[in-house]
Image (cartoon, rainbow, N blue to C red):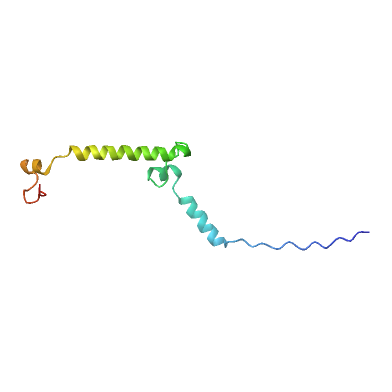
Length: 96
């Protein structure tokens, strides 16, 4: 005859959050924007590129933007040209 040790009763678990908080959380989750909207608002990154290429893609886009800005700055008129065109007053023009 073998004696088995008595099995302790399982503890009763209470929910970690109260039902009111759970309901409030469910409501908030139901109202949150979907992934597409978050991508459009630039909150999430577009994941159409493999994660291993994401950093390279962002670096390339930044480089292209820098090049475009540099080109635009080089092409803009000099202050002397703006004074001649009557766009800028001579007193407002930076010293040459």
